[in-house]
Length: 229
Image (tube, rainbow, N blue to C red; front, side, top):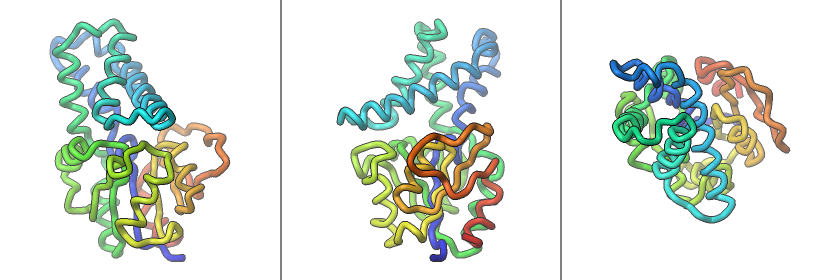
């Protein structure tokens, strides 16, 4: 079955989730953050994801902006920075305008030139996704931006993946689903998507019942993969 539609996770896949902490650490007067921003970014991301899973399991849904703030608050406290309201506000502002990975615009343009539909499917709340897409200047290369808020639960719940077929009228096998989260790529494979895991860190494959069909180091090979799949 030919691929007609390419669907991308947003955070960590198209947008660099470490960019907010990295940029904040480079500002004058942030010498303390400069020595620990990598660990802060890692803790922030880990708690952000953990809280999304816990909320999905318990049925205590809140949008991803709330989860993002909760994860940041935990990370700031873990590193002794919980009293720095100015830093917190700066990090959240930067998160709304995360940098896209360098290969993203050309990769999306190549998919559009090949006649593929393109979209984001993300845990992100609509407002934060709109800000990130606008900041990266990729809105004209996307046919839609789909948020889990339409399903009321976070990934990897199947109802989130259902949003793709509802929007594009595709069968799962017509969709190339791309994520930098191994668990997301695996769950997408279980759903029936053709999946590509963008494994920038060279991590082991997650031990789940399903595995991604493809593992890539970055996004540059996606257009060729979409044609060949």
